[in-house]
Amino acid sequence: MIERYAVIGHPVAHSKSPLIHAEFARATGQDIEYRRIEAPLDGFRQAADAFRAAGGKGLNVTLPFKQEAFRYCGEASARARDAEAVNTLAFGQPVFGDNTDGVGLVRDLSRNLHFDLKSARTLVLGAGGAAQGVIGALREAGVAQLVIANRTVEKARTLAARFPGTRGCGYAELGDEAFGLIVNATSASLVDAAPPLPASAFGRAALAYDMVYGRDTPFLAAARAAGARSSDGFGMLVEQAAESFFVWRGVRPDTVPVLRKLRGG
Ligand code: NAP
Image 1: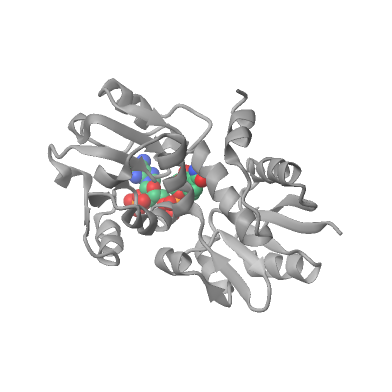
Image 2: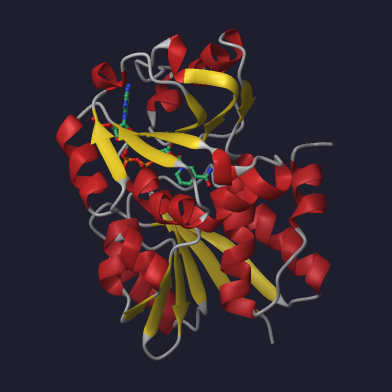
């Protein structure tokens, strides 16, 4: 019997998750259906309840509902509690909430981009839901140092305070500090803007990673101009989806062919 899943967000029409999960299902022989649900901004709980009542088995949760999904679930994984946000709901008794964004980023960096996180002085730009979701996993991956910079400085400090050993600051406070890994977890790229980062932030052989995908961004262009390597966030999207698929189905799909196919390679 086909089991039903969906991604819920607002907006959600652009989401590539149905394509990714269709590829995973085909490759692993799992009989699932996966669609998009656009919930009204004040209608997350109602839409999730309705999908569940109709027999839905699980949801991926995207902007702007990840924090609400954290409050919705009856049991949250340690990584969801770290993030205080949920991107994966599994409809059992109780409803289980997980956050696969952090592991998705770390797997893309380490396996697909062959980046050695252990020796990396790391800077995360932004302190919203996306940044919240990845700080725990980056720390666990053993980055050498972790700094969070945000336009609204207080949010960076508050987020950093939850993770011992990390530092929160404003962009101006970065001075001429150089980093080996810079992750843009802001939404600035969506409006073709770049966070105000000095060129000196990109250290020798640095990797600049933009969580936004499917476009070249001013942040990535600035990184290349400073001599850094650059990557968009498409690999993270596919890796976080693979981890969600594993949470639901107990099967871990091979992401490499899916990444290649969906990138058009
Ligand atoms: P969010 O909660 O709305 O937070 C947005 C963040 O961006 C805030 O820190 C905000 O700073 C900052 N920001 C916005 N415009 C800026 C600008 N012009 N200059 C500097 N900072 C700016 O959004 P989110 O959930 O964190 O998502 C951020 C991005 O990550 C989105 O584009 C999303 O699509 C992407 N994402 C990708 C994946 C993936 O799998 N690849 C997964 C998750 C998220 P203030 O606090 O000062 O407002």
